[in-house]
Image (cartoon, rainbow, N blue to C red; front, side):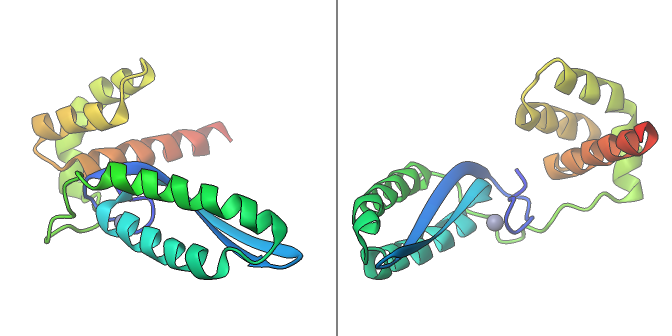
Amino acid sequence: MICQNCGIEAPTKYVAFYQNIGALVVRFSRSIEGELCKSCIHRYFWSYTGVNCTLGWWGYISLVVTPFFILNNTFRYAMCLTMPPVPQDATAPELTDEAIDKIQPYANELIGRVNEGGKLKEVAEDIALLANVTPGQVVRFLQAVIAAQERRNS
Ligand SMILES: [Zn+2]
């Protein structure tokens, strides 16, 4: 719903991509993991794949791990091909005063359902529909509530 990499409100999917650079005796690896939008998934997959295929192999351990990284990345990427693309007018959700006013009447329902273990994605979509805001704004609202609670507790 909100891309953990670029912060834009768009359909997201959980991915984990790995990159390896083998330098004979040492290795440099990198990874990205989280709920990402299709644009970020695409960008990371191709950038990591380029590095894995060219710089990934140089070293004994690298020779062993790199094929697994490439397989994992390709598999994860293939699972994302059917994802809806990022809408052209997608932006990072903003929690405006107007949005807060709209979500407030549903705050108890929102927090209650999340506390009962409801899936954030589904709950946010339901509340967004009721409150006439975007699901991303509902998530931002919830984050603000949690942050306020943590401040009170400390
Ligand atoms: Zn993104």
